[in-house]
Image 1 (cartoon, rainbow, N blue to C red):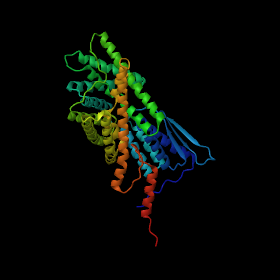
Image 2 (tube, one colour):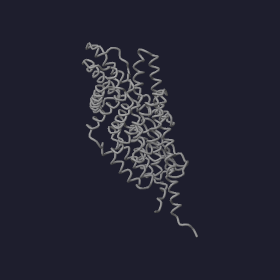
Image 3 (cartoon, rainbow, N blue to C red):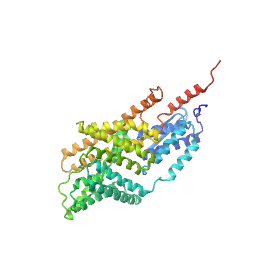
Image 4 (cartoon, rainbow, N blue to C red):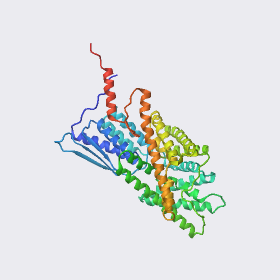
Length: 458
């Protein structure tokens, strides 16, 4: 079978502009769906190369994507800029775009065909009804409550709170209310639910009820993305994501504080609350809760159904490793790092077999480990106990760094290991959670295939 020739260099200005626009639109979808800036930049460069564009650069910031192209120093540069509009995370779209990039790089589709496919991906909408997503978020809340040591009542309350908060935020989003105020409303609802539970005869800690009810509001994913961007050389985007994470968590703190004031007005005494309180559950229960929470989050984020079972298994194994390491005195940061290392190491071959981006497996697998509760605890304690607040914030930063660095290290180790299992190839491409590793690597494979298929001279 003849090898696919590398794409010819494109000189037509209109074709170059169309290729850059395609790369920017793909980058916008990936960045708004939670992909790291390094992955987005690599995907944009791969798309441009596959379309025959040369002499290009790609730059990624938190709200803006930029591409430029200059064929020679004597010619003026072409520059295109695209603003990133926030949209709901859809791992189904991310998976389709990942396949699109691979087909484009491998020569199975041209630039026009890729643009038409991208239009269909963007315009098709979500692959699941919205009510199923709300139900999945409720299941996720219940799973996280199991991880945090909650009993049956706490699990039920956390599930109900997650669904109510999701329905509320959907209505506020339709009214274009900024995300900060949505977080305030979510924290207020979670606290009022805790007040209602405390008013009954149930023997449940209000602190634990609040902690489990606000988990879905906490900005752990953004914090992890910020650390990933900082580790991979995108400090501007990392700083913006950290600011967004703290602002979102501050909204939750404001909402919880408002709920507590409302409880005082109503004459309900919740006692002394312990912000961000949780306990370590029995390990098998933690494993079950982590597996349920991770797979439910993946379902709520529209991940393909074929990915749910592998994600549950990986998350459960990571939780088991975390619990065992923590029980042996390694501490929460090192235990989190080992669990994330396992997720990153296993996610790469599992994602390849399931035909999904590694990002989907990693993002869902680390859901039970998110440091959002520590961020919430630190911001809440700032007004009362500065030393405890500092400790909580340092703990949150340590967990986030451990999770991000562990997952990235796992990616570094998994890629050459898998390639060595297929053939002797020690070239390290760098961790990529979306899209092919490097367009140049594809070009090298094409040349090798062309050399094998060419007839030998006499």
